[in-house]
Image 1 (cartoon, rainbow, N blue to C red):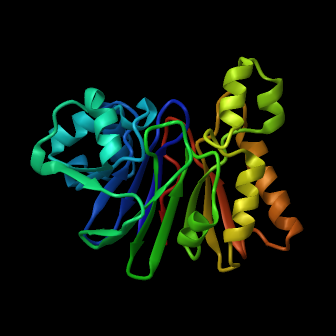
Image 2: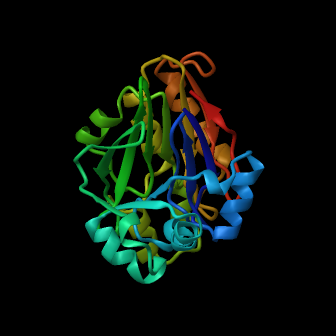
Length: 262
């Protein structure tokens, strides 16, 4: 499997996954043109795409869904409530290309096994994904303020964790946002902090060299160096060794991160 974070953060989110028989996007939160450009930069022809899987209806996740789906005749997958909530943004998509899943119920698409898990976010019904192909597994979890034991169980054993590390708590509390917005972000229906992300990784990693991509960093309340340092320091205290037990990077905003092959 190949994975690349096309863009990550409040300005837009889009991830690319490739197997022998499938090429999919998880979210398409930039313009269609921007996503096409970024895909071509990693050697992917947009005409070769098969589908878009949608996590939730916020604009930074669905901005390009409609145009890409129509232009390239892509399958689009979302749960029922998300379909209703994003209808006015994505506009008309061929009925035969509309696919509805139920959170908590696994399904198959081409050579992929997909498990959509419910998340804790201020949207109608958000979704995180565990994507498997043969013996390889990728977990994608952003836009959630909480992670429960069921989510941890489903993600456990992944080869790659694409995990939200949205904000540094001190930067958030000392920053310019109004109190109501600060409280929303820090709530259990907001976003994961750096500290929370590090704790989750401590529970998930199994010292087999898993890839970790810290994602959806706030441009106002976080910095890549702070997010990565928080994770590294927490894991080092628990005797995880970077480069041996895990490989860590931070997803880039508005541009491609590294293409990872697992």
